[in-house]
Image (cartoon, rainbow, N blue to C red; front, side, top):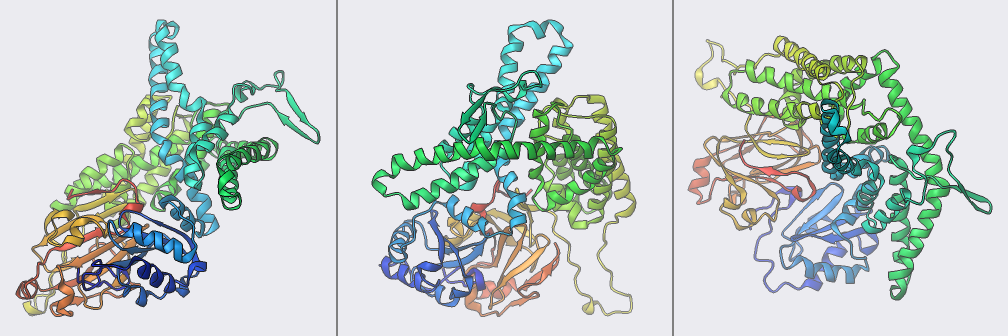
Length: 635
């Protein structure tokens, strides 16, 4: 554990955990972050102390990296993370709470605190995705089953009268009939509230004692509770989403405030009781009535955009959808889709737009796979295109299309044209969360849907084939001396780390090994994050994605690269900090914008071997704990 990587500060010299004074370690950490008053939230995981700091200007990073017990430090997603180690971090954490007077928090609390410091617009757009992503499996399963049950009932009239139909229809409809409960539980997790209290709020809003919202009509109106100056309509919120999310946001805020104010001896029963009563009253008097109306306006606006603009609205959204995927904001549409399924149409007319946009990216990526001659690019593009055809577009977008840009633009055009066709032909789905080929099980008109997909993919495929050309390695002029010609750098094509935020391509040629096989205990333990090692056969490290250089080691042997909330460390060799830069040439500086394939570091394998060190290159996602769906290995 000898290496030191600039702001990542990944290694500290010496055996710092030997007879560590936990109290002293905590005191020094507190002193160098501006004291307890500068701590918004504090938690720990298996290896790291995770802090959200009020004023980062008060943090003395240079001193923190020398605190006895701190093995490394980096910032990620608004958190200051100090690497302390398994079995030690919990002891330092306890002392830290004692020293600073901070309250214990969970990882979720810290993430919520860090997220609270994001710009308001980004929080508003990000929240629906955070709420809906965890419940998508339930929604997808129910929606697909609904499509199958309805298809069977149409194909076999006798089936519609059978007990099997009644039973399967109940199973398929449950998630949608009681959607507010799922949303409430997930929202409580996002906002840091008690998920069981969140469930109570959700159940309250669809209580069987209330009139089902779907049965309300001009001739069938709900009764009213008269509470003096307040009147509450006895109607449920079946199918509503926004009022539920806001109700649980209020519940979580009230609960956390009460936990701080109520004495511990009565907190167990006073806080839940007051939280539920306050939230219930505010929900049925203010939040529900007002925001259910606003939500209906949003839904009507979305439906008008798709159905009443001659398809122009659908065309625009089909073009914008891939850009929201790039920004990680596409899950915000789930609110609209859920509302559409619960509305008068009972049909998700937004899904064909998303499906056209995603399938167009499939067509563009497939064109690259067919047209390119580079075997490695082909090996990435082909499976990525197949993934996109199933509705999972991140590998195609980040690994191929967006990287070359022209295929991405072709996909944007194809998605717009396909969405226009889908709108004009009245396509809709019985669920959300599925697009592409799986959408066949949920669409209302399979032949027309197939035509939409063919149009979207076909347009993107043709445009990509025409405008995209594979870059060939530059050839030195004949008059130039061979020694003067720089070797051509082949852009990486093999992915080594994949997650919901994007794809990390192999940054140096060689044999890819699991991170736990890297010949260094700290790398292999995963304390710095998961990833891979590369036993290099080349001597040039290139950028594994389009991003920004977040750190550069003074000894030139390591860089940090970030993009789309991914924080990546590329570290050449083991203990190579001791070489003091000999044998290394760093080609970038902190803050540089880089493109995938751009050279970052050149190094001498011979010098590393001569110094007695391993030349294995560590490629680690240092914030892997904060990312979803992390998968490692060459692919």
